[in-house]
Structure formats: C-alpha cells, structure tokens
Length: 340
Ligand code: DCP
Ligand code: MG
Ligand code: MN
Image 1 (spheres, protein in one colour):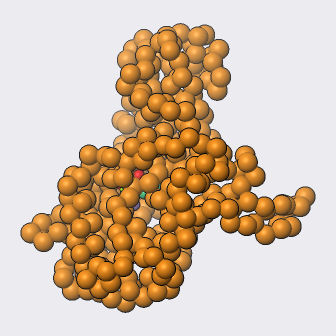
Image 2: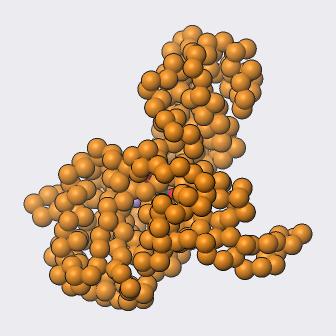
Image 3: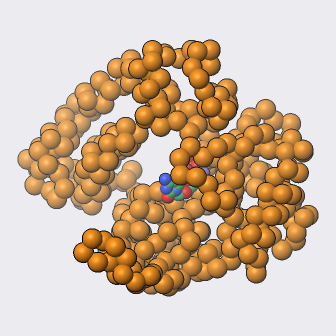
C-alpha cells in the first residue's frame, strides 16, 4: 500500500481477479472476520504488484501471502469469471437480511444478528416489533437517505453553509472538508468536516460549536438530528448527525471534528484516510517505535515484560501533515493518492 501507484488496479493485468477478491475482503470485513479480511488484503496487495496475469493456482500459490485456498479461488475467477463462494454468500437469504440490517446507521454485526435471531426479517418489521434506540429508529427511517451517495457539489454546499454560519460567529474559525471529498471522490458516503481556530483551545472550540453553532444550525433547520456514537464514548471533540440543505429533502450524514491547531497535521492525516491507508501509516509508525493517532505522532513508550508502560510517550509532531510523513520516512502522498 505504501508504494506509489499501487491503487491503479484497473490497469493491472489481474484487475478482474483483484476486484472479486476485494468484494470478498469487504464481505469478511463486514462480518468482522479480521483474519480472513487480512488474508484477502495481503493477497490483493501481492496481485497488485504482479506485471503478468496470474491464471493458475500453482502460479498464484508461488507468490507471497497467497496460500493454497486463495490460489484456488484466483484460478476459479480467471476460469469462470466469477467466484461461487461470493455468489453463495449473496444468495443466502439470512445473509441478505444481515446485509440489510448492517446498512442501518450505527448497527454492527452483533446487533444485526440479534435481530435475525429474534426473527426479524425486514426494516418495517424492526420498526413495528423491535425495541430500538432513537439512533437506530432514525437510521431505519432514513435508511435510503443515508445509503445514498452525496454528489461532490452537495458535499461542498454543506461545508460552505457550516463555514458561513461559523465565521459569522467567529471569523477566526476554519472549516476544512475531509474524508473521501479530500481524496477527490466524485461522491461521498457522508460529509466530514474539521473545525479549527488558530490559538484556540479545545474547550474554547467546544463552547462555540456545541453551545452556539449546533443549536443555531438546528433552529435554521439545517441540522436535523444528532446521532449517538454506538461504541467508545465521545470525548467531546466530535459531533455526529444529519443535515439537510434548504430546498432539499435528502438528509445527509454529517461529521464534525474539533481540532486544536497543534493537532491539525495528525487530524488531517486521520480524517483524510482512507482507513486502509491510515492502518498502514499506523503500522509503519509502530515499526519505527512510534505511535500515530488522530492527535499526533508520538515516540518513547518503553514497555516492560508485561507490556506495562515504563516511560511516557512524547509528542514528536502533531501540527504539520508533511512533517509527519517526513519523520515516518514516507514520501509525500497527495490526498488523492491515499487510496489503498
Ligand atoms: N477513519 C479511519 N478508521 C475508521 C473510520 C474512519 O481511519 N474506522 C478515517 C479514515 C476515513 C475518515 O476517517 O477516510 C472519514 O471516515 P468516513 O467513514 O467518513 O470515510 P470516508 O470519508 O473515507 O468515505 P465515505 O465517502 O464513505 O464517507
Ligand atoms: Mg466520509
Ligand atoms: Mn465520516
């Protein structure tokens, strides 16, 4: 992934195979089967590096990170142009209900399986018969809204509306469009915004956003609902919810991230993604004895034999995105090139 141009899978002689394997990886990822997801991703990254088309299981199995089972699947895709395993998963009615339920905002595998085990079979069934949290109910009522892709121009319009409202309150605040938008995508799954202000503390930012901006945007009927974060409690630096442009009926998922100036570089990396790119950057940091998260790049945690911390970690860099790349020894990648 950290190699330039590895994302140009359409020009790869194994493009068709890779595409099918990516669907398998995505499927296993949704199932939270981390082991298979990783196995598929490693196989995909091996195939991306090949200059020739891999057509036989022997040829595939000779490559790094491709075991015999994956090799057989590669041969099957080349010979039949499909993968029975993938077709079977798609035809399984329980699996289709699982996929349906997993599409509800904030719903993971365990909740979806609980509903299936309780006999629920459709969204209407859930609305009528299941005990739902407010967030789950909204996720179901706006299922197709939240499943729809948001055109790039509309992402911009939401960002602009927030920026104008915020700068009216405080001209020093800045709003940056993040996520797939910053990677150059033509459409996005949601709208990701970073809010920052030079010299402002996180508590000052919190006050203006939560006490003033958010209530004001609710009164203006731009914000529609706040959505609870399902797991890992919010530390007060995020707002998750839905927004809707004037003259539109489409509710869109909107994420606001409050970032102090000193953490802006790390936040830019984190919130640009994509998630696979982030994982490989974090892995790289840990190989170099450092740790990367959305607040900064840290060094100096020394652990004892029971992995207890012996020294506190020190911040190496948080402010500058480019410096974090440099310190990690990664050549700069434009946001549009951060697709793994
Ligand atoms: N992110 C991450 N790991 C996660 C979730 C998010 O590293 N588990 C980071 C990388 C993502 C960014 O946050 O690019 C924004 O998250 P989104 O879920 O909004 O994903 P994208 O904006 O990349 O795609 P989409 O168009 O589907 O919103
Ligand atoms: Mg996004
Ligand atoms: Mn998001």
